[in-house]
Image 1 (cartoon, one colour):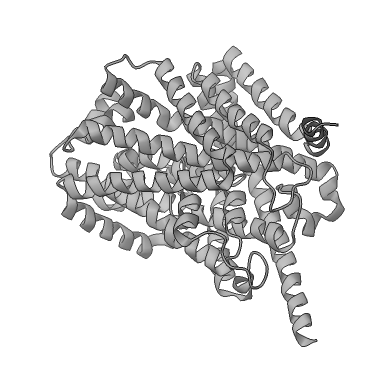
Image 2: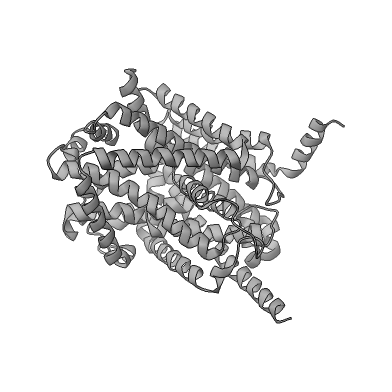
Length: 516
């Protein structure tokens, strides 16, 4: 038997094909239904989505605040001393490389899109008018919705998965396996299978729809720079280029992913530095950003617990609950990756370091890019809100904002390059996690075979390409991903409870060994 035949036999024996086929069939079925009956599908999904957000909104808010508070407790309690690896093991990656991979894996190009324009969506909301100053609150809410609470989802789950993989040496990198301390042998039966299928389904739906947010902006920028008419083919070309970039990095393993992540960070900070230093709004950006951080710190708990029980504006239902749900869907992949690269770090180092680096990068993006465009509005340089009101197009509004910068075409090139890099770094980590997820057994120090990683790299891009041709399908699939967050949240709670139980037992084991 030659080497290739051995590999094929090994592949047949280790891949759980149900984890590959079933979620894709479900997504394909849904997409077909959306195309055949777009309006009917939209109506049903919107009703379900409204029911979950309006009736069970408190469910998401309580989980969000609870996980954030738990993250602080884990960092400063006895759990914080647990090292994700051997007791004397050193971190596998430098702080810069680790933080770069964590930040870029946790956020796609959405961050650049929303950084420029999210305040616009808040500025005209009646709730902002109720609260007072449009300037301060439209600058505060973006860093709240992209701030400590959603990042706590990633970090708490990251230490849970990191403990499972690096301390307990688990050979199954799956959602269900993280529940074993609670579910026991049921993980190997139907409950475990359902958890894993739900996780992969949510992952596919979430990744397919995230492209809908930022790729139209990239397409318009390319059209503007090249003079070509904006079309779906430009969008597809961007998706293909992104796929080539992250597939190349993925096939080179963690070294390729780390190199791409560091490159992405350089592009990202180059864009931020240029806007801050040469945009002509440096003082306004710094002062408004400083005030926004102070306002968030002062009002954090009131924002996190606001429910609008009388539904005077439904602001938390439309925004906060939506965001918590969407971040929960992304919790299927990103925390696995963060936990994997955190080998050698303690629980405390992972959580606090995660907050410092991830929040630092996130806040800088929103406070520099967002406050630059807000400054144009408040100083009367450009009527940003008027442009959006007239066109109802955030993408053309963002391009108009960038046009106010010196050497605007070069900035647009830098913006597209950074967005492609962000998408690539997010999706290479997702494809790596999905590849490991489909194995029945895989050691922590093993990487999936190239054929498996290549399969997922291609599959993750095919649905977005297909959905480019149906806007209603894209919107419907986004609703599906938000709906999927409801059961995913229950699984997240189960994983956290399992970690607390298993980590508590581990600490007792160490104490007993220490007494001997």
